Structures are given as C-alpha cells and as structure tokens.
Length: 396
Image (tube, rainbow, N blue to C red; front, side):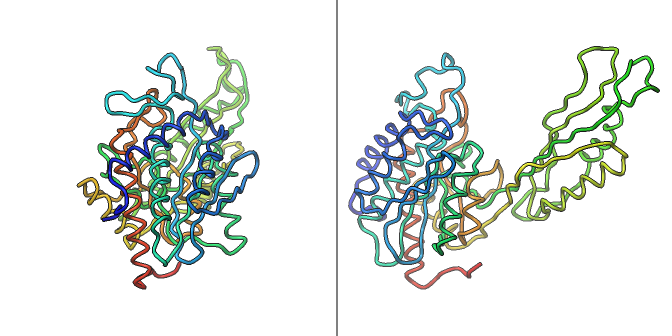
C-alpha cells in the first residue's frame, strides 16, 4: 500500500486541518498573509531543506528532501483571487467552514485544499522515502496574478545553478464532474493583443469629412474571426481567436468616433507559434488598409507531456484511490505548468473538481482531501520506483 504507516482517517484529519489553516490566511494575490512561513516551518520539521526565492514582492518557496536524482516535484500556490461581495457568501470566505460534507472558503479548491493534500503526502514520502530520488515542493504566491515573479522566478533560479526537475505534478483543480475524471497533461498557449485603430472624427451627417474606424475595421475583424489558424492535433483542439472587448464612440448618436479599441486573445495549439500568429494578424490588418497600433502581452506558450511514466503513475493512483479512470485533456486556461515545463521533462496537473473555483461559496468535498493526498503520495512513489528500476524517459 502507498500509506503503510498512516490510516486513511489520519490522513484525512491531518489534511483537513492544514487546509483550514491555509484558508484562514487572507492571501489575496500576491500577498501570502503568513501562509508561506506556515508551510516552510512545517516542511522543515519534516526534514525538508527550505529556501525562499522571493522576487518583486512575491513569496516563493522551494523545499527539497533528498539530494539525488530524479527530482519529483509537487507544485502549487497559496494566493487566491478576491472573494467578491462578502454578503453573497454564506460564511466568511477566510473562515474555513464545514457544511454539508464540504469545506467552504476562498481557495478551498483553487488551491489551498489540494496544496494541503500535497504537503501531507510529501511529509509521508519524506519520512519513508526510498534511497533513490528526491521529493520537492515549489510554492508561490503569484499564480493568480501577473505570474512574473512567482514560479517563473523559481525556475530561473534553479536553471541558473544547474538544478533540475525531472517530473512535476501541479495541484490545479482539473476534475470536471467528480474527483479523478480528468488529468491535464498539457495546456494551450495564450496570446493577447490590443488593437488601436485611428479614424477621423466628424459629424455623422457628413461622413465624407471623416473616417469611421468601426466600419473600416469590421471586415478585418470578421476575417480574423473566420480564419482557420490551424487544425490542432491529437492532443490539442484548433487554435481559437476570440474578441473580448470593443470600445469606440463618444456616447453621442451624431458623432463618428475618431478611434476604435479592440482586445482579443488566441488560445493556441502547438501547431501554431506566437510569432506566426502575430505575423498573420498584421497581414490581415495591413491588407485592409487600417491605420493602427498593435501591442501584444507576454505569451504563455503551450506544453504537453505525452503518455509515459508520470502520466501512468498519476492515472494508476487515481484509479486505485477513487475507482475512476481519468481522461487526458489540454483544455482550460493557463497555469504555472507552462514555466515548469521549460525545465522538467514531465508535467501533469491533477486536482479536485473545478466547478466552484473563483466563485462565491467556493468549496471542496472534505472526503476528497484525504483521497487527493493518497493519490499524490502513490503517484510520486510509483514514479520514484520506476526510476529506481532504471526506467527513465528519454531526455528532452
């Protein structure tokens, strides 16, 4: 068994207590409100060497038990999105509350609950770890924010000193309808642009004296929306172009506006590149003769881990602990997995259901906390055993 020295009830009790302690921290991104110290103190007592790699006001923790390879990493974040209107919550979002078999609080599922499960799993692994390999945790307070000085900073520091990660499980809430039904083995890329089109403002009764940026832009925007950018592949759906905001006008019905502003986003598969998409957008805008400025936000690049040792280990652990056979998916938004994938050979994401994340009354099934902890433990141990047997995947 994956947990010979701990009963399921003990694991459940310990993980629930830690999840409550984390939810009680008002760690709205990028603040951690003491959560990182709480975790580091606990992991140090369990034998981990804990290192703070803070940057730009963001708190980051790299904790490792063991000095040999491979390095199996569990990754997560303590920061949460704002709770929204407090009077819409049935209980204070930062007072963890048990109700109807669920634990309520901001971050319960995204991702203080699964983070607690990871930590208790890591503590048990460190206490009974085999001779081969190391167990590490990478925790940030900047996943829900700009994600510039969080996990990205830790990966940069590890790479600079030649320290690697062989495989990583990110504890994002990936399950759709029930715990265990979905593993994310990759994510699409994200590319956002801001388009500013210049026209000539004038009285709407004399359109010949101006140039309407709305009407001149519509054919170009329609072409962008109708373009087939790629057809995806076996793991990824086709690249999607979506307009998120359009603004123009003076709020007067008799004025042709002088400018139009459009924001848009690509969620793109590995069959396209950010550079290629940017070039194709400009080609369309130029062909339609628009007078425009176009700026791009930082790119989140796609990544994927094919079926292999880590995917197999997580899938088998899920099936054993929950009785569910998970499907592999690359759907959803971006995650810090994109940074880790630049260093680690294998990255998968697995966690609780995501139906209440970022919502009022966010919650997690209490029983899922202990199950998650056992899944993380079993998956890491199985992956380490594979390494001990000399069955490592091919290097990147």
